[in-house]
Length: 138
Image (spheres, rainbow, N blue to C red):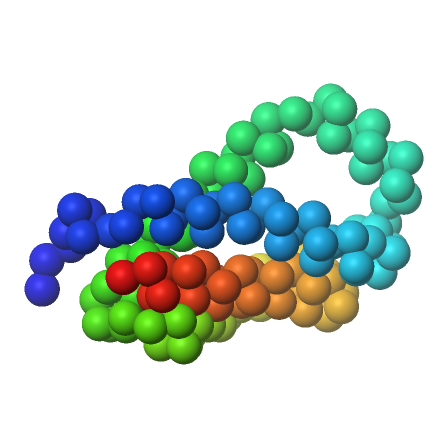
């Protein structure tokens, strides 16, 4: 088995990356209150830091793109060629890689369980949706 990035559907990866931003806006919009409470900040503090920290969106875009490339590689390696199979592969990647490694970090950083569930949950759902997009587009 070799890694062949030529088999990646780059248009599907780009669409999945854009979906990451839309999902993030919706997800953290729904969980805004509990999320801000869990990180100990209010809306004004976040807005001020966002203006000072504009590179956060660039980092987020690159991270989302790389994550969706990885999902596309996993979907291809698994031979998933449908929306449902893509969802399964993406969800397994989200739970198996993101949620597990994030759990250890959050426990040792003494972060609240609510924050972990919101942040890890976003990535599990994102990877499942990314897998669906890539799987359906194969």
